[in-house]
Length: 557
Image (cartoon, rainbow, N blue to C red; front, side, top):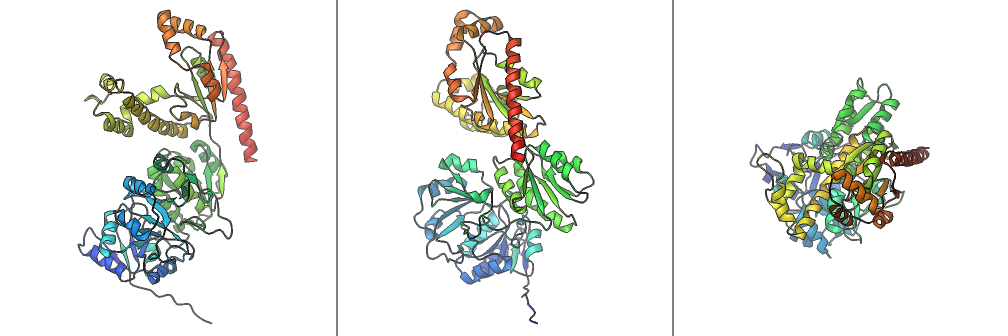
């Protein structure tokens, strides 16, 4: 009988913050063809000289990684390195590098012959990125070569986000590990293929899809992001084909509104099963082994914790794991992708609320329609009120306004409306810029609130429902209309204004044709009392909710 022997090497641990020689010695390992665990802002990588085929071969051996799974090469923060190792580099690559490098973005480009096919998994393309970690950037500079570096875990296991994770998987297999602290992002880089048109997202990661779309316009999403590649399909980027990130116990991922996914897990949880959940729902699972991902609305924290959560259970005897999953906006696409791959795409949809956008001109009866939806248990989100609240409390929105228009806030922190008005109302471009800022940040806050509500129906109250992009969040959009003369009479009575001023307000607003062209449905409030129209709206929404719920039940079956 032949006994398999594994060569054990002494793995050095480097601490750059304590040892001034650590960078130079770590770079020497790379130059000498060795393997080095390196920190990045995303996850820890298992690095080697990308141009040295023998060193690259050792990466695959140490990880137990399939040979056709391509590697990413890491370069300094200097776009000239793109031309050094890639050809036919499009202008979009330079635009992306200027905006997002150093950072969690990998670009797929045609390789030059100097990059071995072993590094690219046999492909004529290569993934290139510049990591946003000072220690690893210093090691790349000192070594003078690009570093090929997949995640530093044993193939199939959750990726490492601390040096301790690297040691757990790679001690005795590689030459050194550099301790650069915990990873700030926590999920791997986003991979975009620039060799096709439109560009294609091959792996969601630390840079959200929405950020890429802001630069590139249309971006397609590869089917491997949401499902498995079929047998025989060749992966064009790391993480596309093989089961990844998996703990020992089987995982079931539960999508849908957080309240619903938590209730589903509680109803199906075995006596000894483990749970990965949002912080708010941990009390539901008392008595079980739990790993909290972070608050339901904080995807940055979830990204930092997701791999640690999956690893945690390997030190337990849980027979199965249930995991709550965020929605797909922002970093949620990357977090969900990692959880679903860990589960082998065993996913259960626990449902979500029906979102109804309600819009219409002044005096049409929108308030009566909203009250009808509330009577049916709907949670109403008033976009105007939420925007004014965000002006007081939302740091990203306030920062964007200050960056665009200067400090237009008072010492007490409230918006100086006169000061901002003097800027934006005198310049149409400035007003457009303000609207762009509002329309970028408002949907983020609406999504956060939708995720946290236990209601089965959410109504979004927005005059500019479509301009703001909020219409795209809705399952149904409803325009409330009324004849102009009826609206004028109501406005005069309600606001105690003259007929002339009421006519000016109505004429300045959208026509009924706008709502007919853009809304899923239109409710005409011809000349009914608010009570009568409220009953009409109640019956309309009651049927819409029933139809939506019935469709959801059919999908589950």
